[in-house]
Length: 294
Image 1 (cartoon, rainbow, N blue to C red):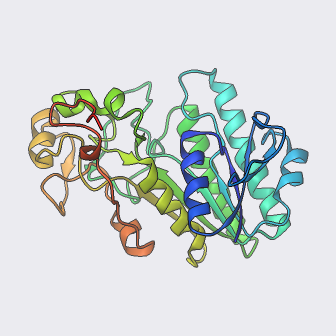
Image 2 (cartoon, rainbow, N blue to C red):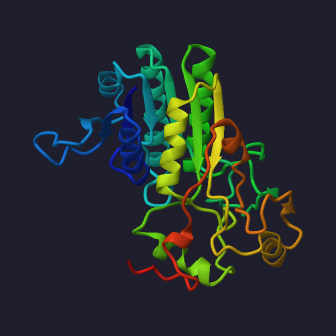
């Protein structure tokens, strides 16, 4: 397939480009910055510079592709003014979906966020209703980032109602790559009291990329939303015990498929996409949360 990946220089986009090429697809990357080289080097994907908030530029890059992976966005709400986060993310997604519908793109993979339910950047504190969190959890976002991601999912709903395009929205958990495991997760491995809104969940960037490749290759009709998180929690502890110790009865505990369960359920992705995680924090950190020297 010919696949366009927006945000191709970001953490998710970089991993996805590599995974798609490895799977045999013809890939073009797109991002806001200029290409680092005057020409495409052997083994590199093609590259198109574009500002996704400019509809004309988006229409110019989308033609001729079988599938689009839309990962281009401001990745969280704390380093830009709220109106900038919302305007950038929602208009980028709107333009990409609109252009993809008009260009006859067959599959649109929308990189959404685990923040959509609303308990990541709230001004009024709120906890998940239950755990592990799944795709049926109530959605009550407060911040501009989660709102933009929710509206992106709703734009996908609208797209499949008016076209033959298939959409899949991926909600990745806290994405890790070899260079940031220790910085991001080391303290949680050492101490479960280092709490996180996603209840000790994470995903390896390469496992996430594998899920996105499966989404691109999927024939699932309509629009489906999938959480993607590794099945184990950071630290590999007894999840039920941790939930009780740190949250008491404030979060309902639902059925677990393993003792060291993640706080996010990926049963739907396992069942419908055939996705299984192949990597773990244990590949990068020792029992004290320090990087394993190779």
